Length: 303
Image 1 (cartoon, rainbow, N blue to C red):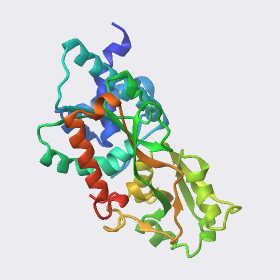
Image 2: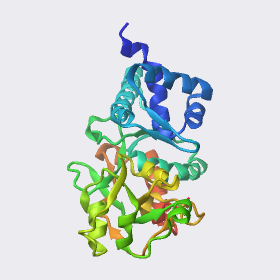
Image 3: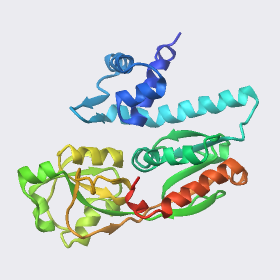
């Protein structure tokens, strides 16, 4: 038996930790103990190297773990699809969705209890991945994508736009002071994700009239949701997407800096296979999704 096959269960545990962002939530999803989750991760780390930076209240994936994320998500999604095909059935009450990790953890997951209450008979199967998956292959019904809306051969609907602005933890502002102008950002560490410059610090600084400002970047992470966790931990000032903030501004976990907002060149789109668009279960999820987006404050990711 190959080492990969020997590690298959541990890799499934790793995927659950990456999707949920914590050992305890991964344990609940997999119906195992938190210590079992920790043991599986430690076994993988003994072979591969450090997978997570563990803090008091924050679990941050290392670049090694982030590199594995798309392969795990796509691999287990394909295994699930193959298993269903082997069983020779397609449950009309199942809706399969692919979604970005940041949108899933910060926007979709907090709202899913509402969907479960209104449609308890429908099972959602989520593939959470940064990697764009092929809907035409037939294993997935729909996707929520962050892009420019160019998805040939698929049914495309614009869901919502997004805006970016700086945020910081109150603890950081208490210790280092609050910047009073964009030029003051040169005195702080700036956190960033791997978004293109047009929707990252260079784009926002240019709009604020500080395109030539010499800034210091403290950390970069591939997931925009994890970026907010780093900001809440007081590691630096982050350029946040409004859609992912949830209630973190209202409850004081983060503070918005300045009134200058940068409209994102990307928007959220609902993308469906034409074959799936007519399925009643898919239609019910889509109607629920539209309703959630129309709710007051939905653009801020309010739950």
